[in-house]
Length: 300
Image (cartoon, rainbow, N blue to C red; front, top):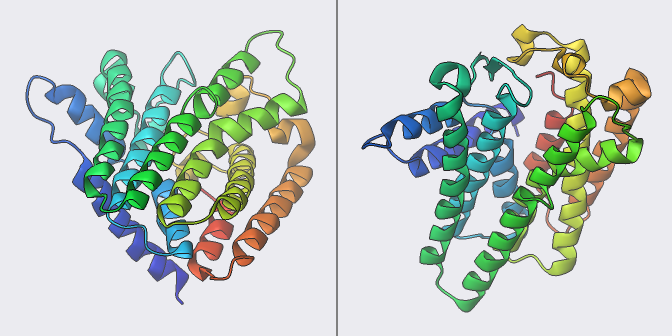
């Protein structure tokens, strides 16, 4: 298997899936739809829908409903990036190598573009019910909807964002436990949603889904630690967004707490455990195993 060629091919297919579900920028709401399209079409690794697709392949056939959830999770991820970049939060002018949504469309349209993507994500996911054929299909889609809502909400990504914002306040005491909570929720929760939804839609049993959830948590935490490392060691040209923003925003990161060497060691440990879980199932997905390693040890 030539991993890079396979990755390019699969990412292109995921891109087509996401584009197919995007609404056309027309009508009186055309401006916000245009901003939504701008943010989604900025590209990126398409990590979450790709992980969903490949986890489903690990367990079997997920059916046509999978594409609805693949698009939905990317819409949710993109909305979170739009809001993260706003002046009230991280105040970043560049994302994925080009100007952020609020810089191009203004803060007001950027806010409602994020709102629009979040709502449209669930509208898209709900269309999966129209593709169900059996009772099992309906039950799996219902389970997937519950996972998506919880992992994207106050007990998942939004909860992590809240803790992250409060940790930046002057005088805030941020412990190792607080930082781990932020990583597990702000970053890992959507990766958990992606992989567990893929497993559920493909018919994985409860025990297997639990193991995938643990694997995804490791991937998410390692991914965020690597992000912290790159914010210190990389450049804007390579990363496609400003570096040093954690220092600028007075964020306590894993690197600041533990140093570069220990942070790198933790990334290695989490990665090994995640891949070991993937290798423990009856069926192997070598592409997925390599993808996890490549994403964690990425340079941008």
